[in-house]
Length: 232
Image 1 (cartoon, rainbow, N blue to C red):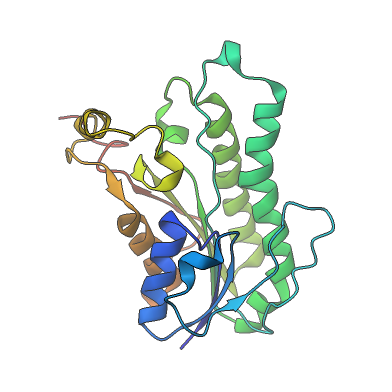
Image 2: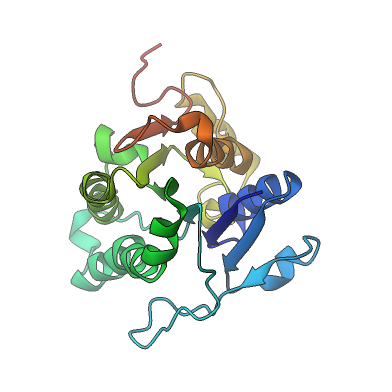
């Protein structure tokens, strides 16, 4: 049994990961604005949300954490002529600054484990270059840089890796996948001819948290239906 902190555990990938880890008997600390979604999981410890607030105190964290997963993200797709500085600031705040604040708050608990793992999330659009992704790709590119820097700084006691999905069927993507026609069109863009499910991405995060990935750090793992590397 291990101790894990999941930020954004109330929906999508975070919820799927919480269910996976809970089923295997791990102890979970969660940060969520949607605790009702987790009512079916017993024994969870809730940490005060509001980590984007400068006055956040992170009350409720344990003395030791074996892993931390930061799931909050944004999908802000606009042409560059329509993006405002506030769009870039908001995406950076949610994707980067939020992750930094939670990692800083959990730093002592992660170091106390001696073999902890941090998992962050990027997007296939960082490596691929996709239209209308300027703001979100800029912030997620910063996430990848942050992860590599922390992987070096926190080694050998804490590993840091990134999962970079393509479009995944989660509440965050509901506007893009709001009809069967949109889902089918998105699926056809991927070599595997389907879009990702929350469980696909959560399984990759679970792998990076566990001992089976104990010699992996500073990496960006693409879980994207082949979109980043294949042309068919």
